[in-house]
Image (cartoon, rainbow, N blue to C red; front, side, top):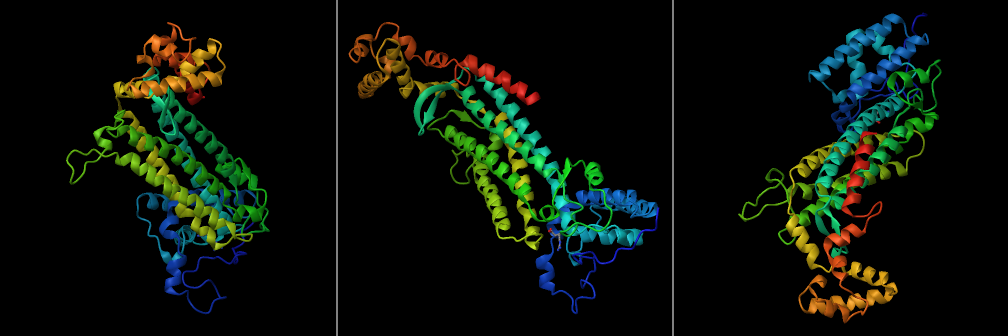
Length: 474
Ligand code: ARG
């Protein structure tokens, strides 16, 4: 092992000096500028990943003969101590040292001396921060995928319980055709399943190693990037150094995934809010998910789903922030990118909390099957079934549609549902109507008739539930 070279200034000149950036500067940085440019207040959240990345980098430097065994041992010992201090909340973060990277490097140097100064050989904060964010995001994605799955399990259980529970299906928020509550819930299972797929796909692109790109052009040291990738569990190295340090598309993609998931949850929230209103009375949320009013004693408000709907706006906003952050940046790294962290952190935090609270909320839901049934029975939900019945008797669909429209008008005028008209009354709209029409007009008959993959027949809902369980355990 040859002796380690001591690190000279790095290509981007970002050596950790607390007051000036080296001999190049003739006065210290302005106090306000220092606060304005510091990121340690929020990027210290990356500390454990920063240390992980540094340890892999140091090990590789040692393996290629750039760092001595003694230096590597010092770095490993020092980082262990820092990690303990950080976890115990004993680490003192300083905005004099700008960001998480410089704070850790300086403290390491204080602890172990020369080895700490040699750690930054062959890298820059530019490839370092891109690596840290990817490591952090990979973990966040794994957490979110698990939480999505937990919520899906809850939806599937509830869907199975309500595979036969009739409710009105809506289009334009007008009663359209009967569906089962289980079928309705399984629609959300599908949305969340796509969200999970999207996240898994996004993870593949997050899981690439930027280290080795150094400031922007690569480095003159004989580094082994594949080895660092392997040590950090990255699937591959980022292929182009300029791209590796500058693009944040992986984070934008994550925010897009998150925005879609929040949007799905926001739609279900909107439905819960409607269903919980006494006008619908379809469901009741457990008291622990509601709040009262300080003035109106009768109120029980669906604050949790309302907040999910509200927080969706915030997550969508983060997506737009990051897209806007990126759009005007010339290659390669620009300090603009420091602004990627808060939107990313807040997106992950908001989504995790939302998924957790949502799974709990869906566990505490009470379903009023009688109210759902009554609403389905009131809204001429089986009008299409009557038309289909006439088609089966030989009438062209357009004529059947017209005959049923007239029947609905008559029934509505009498304040009755179609099934409450007499056979003679129904025959006035078409001579093809026979005794067997009433079977087609029942809610159960209507459901059972939609008996194909993706249909609302209770049998199909149960099969969908079974397939869903297999997909969840795959
Ligand atoms: N705190 C910076 C960030 O978040 C680290 C990279 C700084 N690099 C630089 N050349 N100033 O992006």
